[in-house]
Image (cartoon, rainbow, N blue to C red):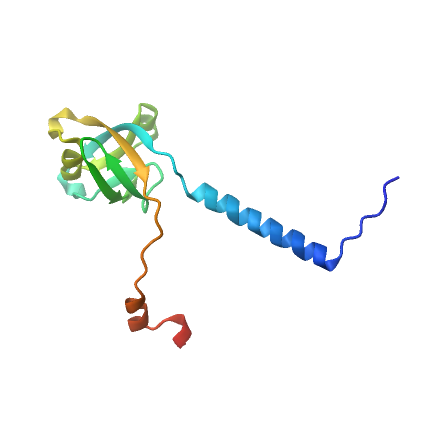
Length: 138
């Protein structure tokens, strides 16, 4: 027969804190991808804009894309399609940026690239926060 386990209030607080910390660490690790993706990038027509970047993760990811040259961009759309991803496509890029990154004319169509996440905290603008009134002024 097993003895009764008595959990005190301080034990419960400690367990809850540890569980919360573990959940936070696991979430942070899942959000920060430190590996680079290698594959091929295609170009999108001018109507999409020079800053167009479609990545499998969707919009809002800041990355460095390197081919013959490197360019830091923020994804604006989700893509390429799953079928194209299975064939090694890692990004769809606006044609002007594609030509700069790849160092090739658009007639080539695809070029090898490396896409690496930018691992930096977002900049803060305390002056703008003061001008618009921060939470402390409510």
